[in-house]
Length: 335
Ligand code: UT7
Image (cartoon, rainbow, N blue to C red; front, side, top):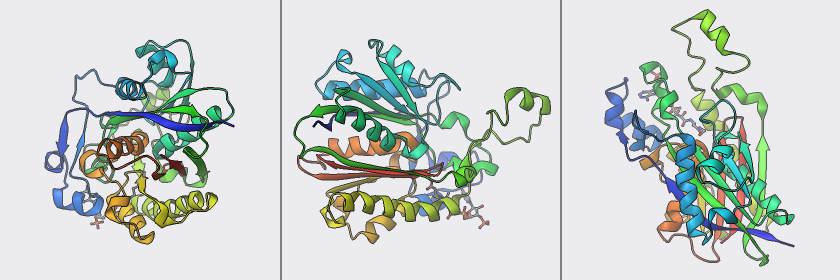
């Protein structure tokens, strides 16, 4: 019986920093509101004219993760790519990673689970490794939000939250069953799909229809979020899916050495921390610097926590995410 463990991690964020004060010049918002309601101080947005895209950022993060795993691109057997902001409507971004990194013609799977995408990706990769089909799998989360936000006051409840960036992990086969991914837990509730979504362009709001309507007030291609509703569901589902992971492994909240929650809102992470009685050292947050990078957020945070020496051999690491879909997920990992 094989197990999978994370052997390499990397992240890439654009160097263009957008502060809350910068945003207040674009729309009616202010630093105090944003920090108080979300915890965000600044985020990275791809500069207009830059060559960065969702795929190229993902490839940059992946390159670092592969090197840190002590592998080369030729050792990777499969790519799992999570994003809600792909370079193209189709094909997905996984094939671009294969091309940019000049990898052999290995399989590439795209995951569309928004904020839960990376944790779903870990679960998929874990199954492929546990069955013995693959040895080394690249799991990437990458988002280019800034090009698709409504930067007027109309879109402020969403625009101030999101940031651009990418992170990647290499999952590798191990025969030591005491280490690695212990379990993963995946959920969805599609009846709330329209609580956090982008409607068009899509089959429902297809381009010819949008062109025919030619309505400058049309906002169906900007992200829509019922913030309070999403918030209320997030705190419940985060708690449930973390507990589910712990109980599956006969563990309790105080056994957690490091909880990496999806960086949606600092208030959500603090609520979970308090509920489970965890100390500041047991929960990692970086939303202050990057905002919400959706599919990239968990893996960027995991990478930073590891780089800062906050995750050590033998630690119990829990990843948890909730977002559009709704989808939510957790992964329990013995480092
Ligand atoms: O990653 C996927 C999952 N996403 C989440 O989990 C996000 C969950 N939701 C949230 O984080 C919060 O709901 C937000 C941060 C999005 C909003 O915070 P809130 O405390 O729920 O604020 P609200 O939407 O209830 O708005 C409160 C007020 C409103 O004004 P009135 O009606 O009270 O006069 C808004 O118009 O704040 C106003 N407002 C703003 N003011 C300044 C909304 N956005 C802004 C803004 N700057 N950017």
